[in-house]
Length: 312
Image (tube, rainbow, N blue to C red; front, side, top):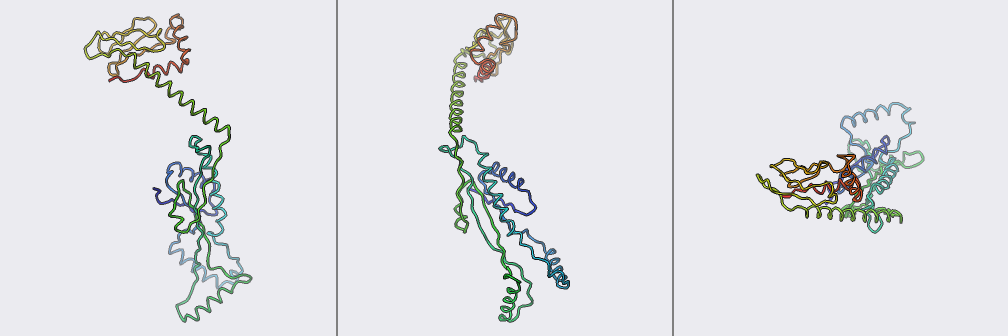
C-alpha cells in the first residue's frame, strides 16, 4: 500500500539536475512511495500580506506604477518547466533499472498522474454593499484591460509519479499516463541469459564443493580426546595430511611442507600453507599443479572457503 506522496515545488530559480537527482534517490530509497511535483505558490505569511497591501496603496499614488507590465503568475509560467523535469526523471529512471528485472525483454517505467487546477486571484474590495453595485463593479474591473480581459483565475499543475498504479487519484479527477517501456536489444537479452546461466553454474559448483568437503569428515573430536582423527577429502590431496591432535586445540603436522591446524569449536582441520609455503619443493609444485586444475588461486580459495563449515 503506497503512503502519502512527497511533494516538490517547481520554481523559476531552481536547478533541474537537483530535482532529478532528488527524485531518483527518492524512488531508490522509497520504491513504494509516490512523488508529486507542483507549481503552486508558496504559502505567504500575514506580514507579507500587509506589506503587499501597503505597496499597492503606495503604487496608486505614483503614476509610473500604472505603466509597469504585470508579470505572469509563477504557478502558470513554471508549468513548461514542470513537464520538462518530469520527462527527464522518467527517462533517467529507466536507465537505472536492473536488466535482471526485465519482463519478457521489457522494463517498465513510472506511472504518471496529471492534474490541472485554477487559483482565484485576490481582488481588493470595499465593505459589502448593494449586490447590484458589486456586480457592476466586477464587470467594470474585468473590462479594465487595454487589449484583453483581465485574468482573475490562474492555472497550476500537479504531476504525481509512482511505481505502482494509484486508482484513487483517477477517482479524484487526475488524468492517467501509462509508464514508458524500455525494449531490450537482442544483444542485451543474450548477455542477460549468459549471466543467468553463469550464475546457475557457479551455484551448482559451490554446492558440489560443499558436498565433497562434508563427505570427508569421518569424525570430530570431543574435549579431552587425543585419538580422534580428522581427514578432510579435498581436491588438493597432496598438500594435506591426516592431522592427529595431541591435545585439545593444538597443531600437528606430519609433512614438512604443510601445517594443519586443529579447530575444536568448528570441528575441522584446514591447511595453513598449501601452495607457496615451500616455494622450491617438489611437493609444493605438485600442489600448485593440482590447484591449477581446479581454477588456480580462485580454486584454492574456494576449497578453503567451503572447508570452513561448522560441524556441530
